Length: 239
Image (cartoon, rainbow, N blue to C red):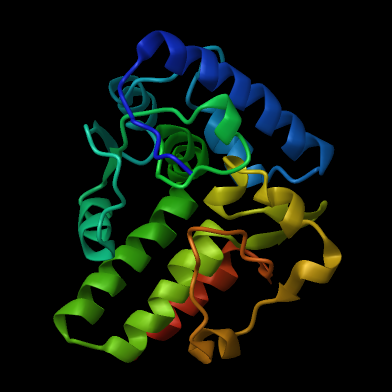
């Protein structure tokens, strides 16, 4: 497949953003998959669904809640994990510079601002999620500094299989927790019962990794956000 040349295109980015928003939001609603954590954060952003939000406006919206600064970059690449977590630990998050095309609605092989904003920002507007993510970031940095490769594998599992692709149990049922589900049709795969598995600490040492280039096909259900915090703490306590 010929590689798409990425350019910043405000007019078409807005059109593509609106198409993506309408389609994915309908997908999530059809599955009753939207987490209360995500929708509560999203409601704080004052986002106009008809156009791509600007990093500076999202920063202004989120400052009263968790204090993050969103940084618009000219990049289309994924940061190294350590660089990402160092920014998160400073309450900063970078944003890539393009919105995927309509023909990439289901899947985009590069990180785009649609995923950055819809997948991460609403969660980061929630203090309990932000506190969890800060714990994950500082734990990852400590594991790097102490060269704990065994624990880094566990933290990579948490970052990929739970933060990006996890499910969470709420009073009204199982909901999408992973940021990928708010920007991709992979949410349909995740809500097939045969693809769901209850998360336990035993999964941490499985060596399972997150494949960014295809649908995972296996999705872990966490009992609660506290369950995730306890899991990160279990790793942190062993550094």
